[in-house]
Structure formats: C-alpha cells, structure tokens
Length: 377
Image (tube, rainbow, N blue to C red; front, side):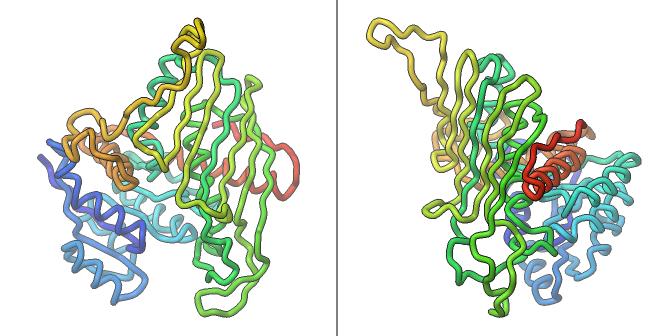
C-alpha cells in the first residue's frame, strides 16, 4: 500500500480536525484506503508551526505555504487557512498538480473562484472540498433514499444551520466575522447547508435572500470597537426549476443553539427529516403506508443509522453514538479513496467553484433585495 506525504497549511481549529483525521483513520477503516504521514505543517508564526510539528510528527515546520504546496516531497495538500488566503494557496498547489483537500468555502468570492476554475482545466490530481455534512450515516442514507425515489417529486423543504455565539455584544470578532478575510455567515455556515440541500433536494434555480448584522459595532481581537461588516444571519427563499421552493437559514445569532443543522424535505410520496443534535437517526415518512384503521401504521419512522457505515469501516462499533468528528473522518476517507484509486470524487474542487458562485449570488440578492438566478454549471 502506497504511503502519501501530507502537508497541512493552517493549523487552527480546522487544521487540527484534518490532522486528527489522518492520525485516526487507520483505526476507523480496515483496510484504510492508503497510508498517510503528516510531513509538513505551515502556520502564520514560527512558534505555532513548531508546536504543530511536534503534535503531528511533521518534519517540516514553516511559515511559507509554498514550502508545502511546491515541495516535491508532498503528495497531498490540506488548505485550512482563512478564506482570503485560499486562492493563492490553491493556485500554487494546483500548479504543482498536488492532491488537494480544501476546507469550505473554496475561496473568498466568486471572482477568485473563477480564477481557480480556469486553473483547474490543466489539473489532473484529485481535489475535494471538506463538506462533512454529506458524510454522516443519516445524510448518506437520505441521499440513497432520495435517489431511489422515496420522496417522489420534491414539493418543499426547509433547512437551517444555527449557532448563537454572536448574540453576545461583548464577544470579540475573529476572522470569520470580518469581510476582509472572506468572513460572514454566508461563506461560513450557509456554505454547508446550501451544499447539503442542493445535494439532497436537487439543483436550485434562483434565490431571494435577506441578511442581518445584529450589533453594528463590536470589539476586535485587540478589544478596539470596530464596525461589523460580516453578516450574522442570512435567510433564503430558494426555488427549483420545477416550482418546488424551500427556505434556508444560516445564523450565528440563534439564541439557545449550539451547532445545529436541521432539514425537512417533503415530496409527493414521502418526507425525510434530520437533526444534527440527534445524529443517530434519520426520520422517514412513507405516504404509501396504510393510514387506516385508526391511523394504520403511517407516521414518521426513526431509522437507526447510528454509526452504520459500510465496510471497510470497523471502528467504533455501529451501535455507538455517532459524533461530529466521525463525519469529518468519513469525508476524509472519501477523498483518500479517490486518491488511492486515481479517481475524482465529490464534492470536488469544481463543486467548490459552483458553490462559491451560489454564495456570491445569495449575497448579491440580499444587497439588491430581489430574486436572482443561480449560474447554470
């Protein structure tokens, strides 16, 4: 089995998630799709780079991303930096034909996405976006059931991705709240839920969006009061070409919430619903089940998806409660399976381009306060 050298650019929260995936994958899958070894780490400061190298066992600790993206010894590049840094790092790694695992969103805006799209024309390695919401057993099963016709024709849907951290006016802004870094809830949370709902419910045609900033000013990382530019909330009314419509919300001002992805999809044959706070279950409603006598056996059925991934997943056992990190591990497994086979997998970097264009359309719709069409892939 070939061993691939891995370089991670950015080692904040999501960089640690990606590194932990490589270090734990051999326990989760037997056999793992390939062997990997973290050999390079890059951060913005020498001290954090050295600390990351000590944690991962990497041989190279650097503050220059090109020493990762352009080192012939590196096979796989992870991009885990703030959104406004992705473009240059992606173009460098694409130019070297590295396998790329890029955190969402692809870049900071649609103009940068088009630049990356052009570069992908000459790219022949495997690239994937980190869109882990697709990779829980419950969401994988939902996709299977929808593709098999369980819902019939989609009539309507509703989905949310809710946090509450920005309700507190005293909370300091990080880069995810600052537009100069490609921040705002559209790029941050809406990227996940918009991708998931189009993946499940089918291609979207148009959108009408509304955004809100709860507190006009809040402290930056130094404590200095600063104007807030990154939106805290986005509400979307989204249409399909066949007339189906749904609502999508992403918010960091949903008081009382944690990390909550929920969806309901209604079709003319059935319905599906999911709540990430109850990740072991997918709920399904079959309109074909008898409703008499006295309700018959019709109603929502709670499907016990738990941790029931297909082989070669072997750990933890399928009856153990699923967790947020397990979705990330299976997302990485999907990518590495493509790398090992030499086959492109989804969600690809081109999907990242398409998603970035959709996010740009959502933002423009909110500013113009009008319906806008999504760009046809």
